[in-house]
Length: 80
Image (cartoon, rainbow, N blue to C red; front, side):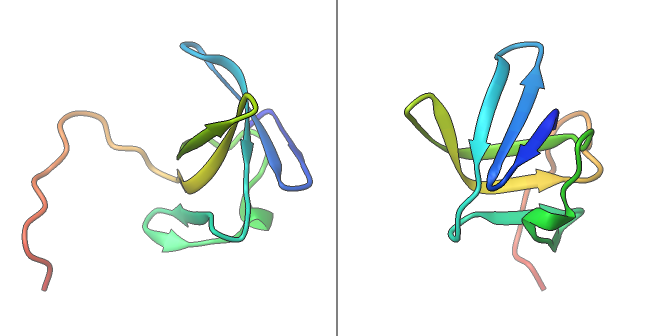
């Protein structure tokens, strides 16, 4: 995250350059598996955002932050 203005996060990554992620009432934000709010995010945080692109911005359905694991994803089996 390079800037936070209201409900918009400005982000930058090597592949897509600068982008804007819009957070709304439907956006789920999670840090290390625990729900958080937009106010918990800070400039400098690394995020992964998923959503639909609209007017050149990503309207986020889900934002994840915290520890990102490298390597293959484990298979998700039945949860206890």
